[in-house]
Image (cartoon, rainbow, N blue to C red; front, top):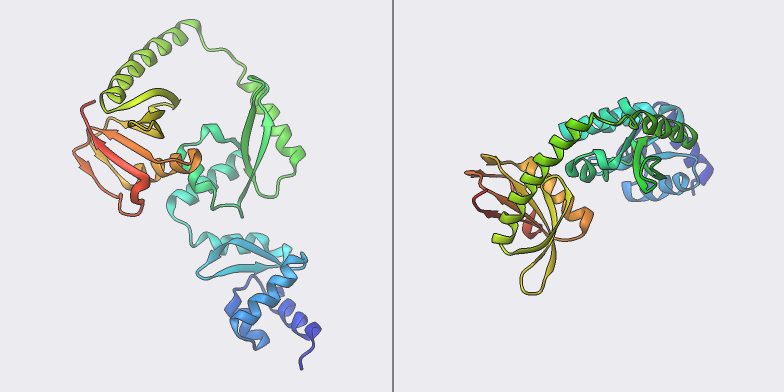
Amino acid sequence: MEDINEIYDKIMEKLREGPSLILEIAERIEKDTLQTQTIVDYFAAKGEIKKTARKFGSSPVYFLEKDRERALNLLMQTFNSQEKALIAKIRERKVVNVESLSSAERYISQNLADFMKKVSAQDNQTGQKADYLYEQGLSLDVVKSVINSKDEKQKQIPHETSVKRTKESKELADQKFYEVLIKNGFQDPKEVERGVFLCSYGQYKIKSIVQVLNKKAITKRDFINAMGYSTMYKTITFILTNADKISGNKSFGNMVNVIKTSI
């Protein structure tokens, strides 16, 4: 019977050549993929081998720490343009307040743990806890330093007149949105983002998220965005829209519902 140390040596020999998938490792140690997965995951659990959370096809990417960037570059081939854009944003800014991201970006970020992590910290301006995404590999001391630096820059107060105009415009738009919500049976609307409301719906007052979209066409990106709200608030999402064209809702089932109305 083959010694486990011999198997380990063969696995490490393969990984020294570069990041590998289960099938490639299985060929090297001459085991089936199920046996190989069990063995390699055992060493990964001990921290001797690294593995990606996201899969390349049906297999994680296994690698040694020295090849982390090569492993991530391999994994990047599986991502769509939106995922790549979010990764680029995090890498450029290093640390990003989750509140500054769109709901679609928040939803997408859940599947990008190999590239970014989340941490909670106190917002220096509001005193409230805020969530931040930061680039994988940054130390928490560096993350804290970046957060504090950004908070200082944001303390500049806009001109009073501009603030007043912005407030007046927002109030008018909100009033219009509230009328649309009430007309369509949504009660007690509370705005959680611009044009997005937490409401009670129907006779049983079901908690729902409602997104008001005044646009000509609703696309798959809008549905991904809406699905992000469903995930965040753990409830169904409605899109109220006056769009003539609606497409891309096949993948989201009953979690995202569209109501056509006048806005």
